[in-house]
Image (cartoon, rainbow, N blue to C red; front, side):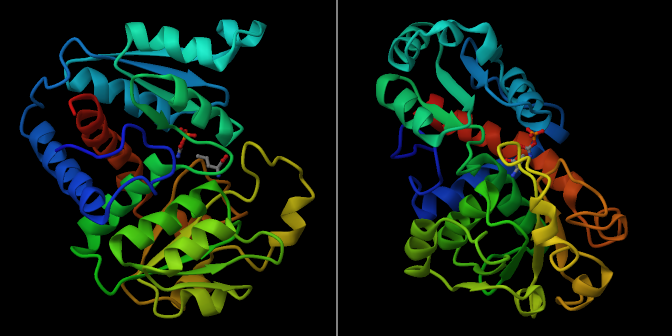
Length: 304
Ligand code: CP
Ligand code: NVA
């Protein structure tokens, strides 16, 4: 499968057909792996990973994914690179393009990714920025497809902070035709441009009331109230107790609703243990699916 885009920075680069195609390929790769192993379609290819922020899932799933497809991943903390001593993003991008086949970067400012992508001659993947987390959303929609068998007619309720993961989920909703209701405190709404663009393709509702958001929802999603770039403890007062996903809120969604969370989670803050560790939670499948979706993405970008 070929993608029109060279880079994946937000999800907005994909067509609906490419988005659902990537998810179908992820499901195929998962089956192939469980049957005994994947074909080594990225033999001799390398992925350079740059982390400005900590990571568990993104780092391990990308590295394992490259290995399972016959390639190799190099892990770099930005502190260990010459960027930390003032080397420009332009020179870094040009250099890495001469060694590697793809760059995955986790950064604070999204503009840095745009800069990397502009100067790199190889694909650049966003492994999370302050504004977007597209790889997470590929895994989330794969999980939704596995559990619900379709996208058509589904409703997602996002509860809490209209953050980077929420922004990318809005693009995922637009690409799949799923509708979204987003409940946030005033001042914590998602990216206005993402909402406006997505509203041309699907229903995106903004509310301050979590109970309105979960009404008839097939999928309930939460994320931390304090993202890596937003660690101010005073934030919590704006979210608690109203925006916690607990049993009462889950019961107000559809009976067969599933619960998603990108992890890491803070139990008893954005979600209670009874929900995240309960029967409606699919967070471990969701975390696993990072591996399968990123392999489909790497294969599509590197082999294109
Ligand atoms: N969900 C996610 O991106 O997890 P990490 O921060 O552990 O990579
Ligand atoms: N919104 C969270 C997601 C972590 C994977 C953050 O940016 O820290």
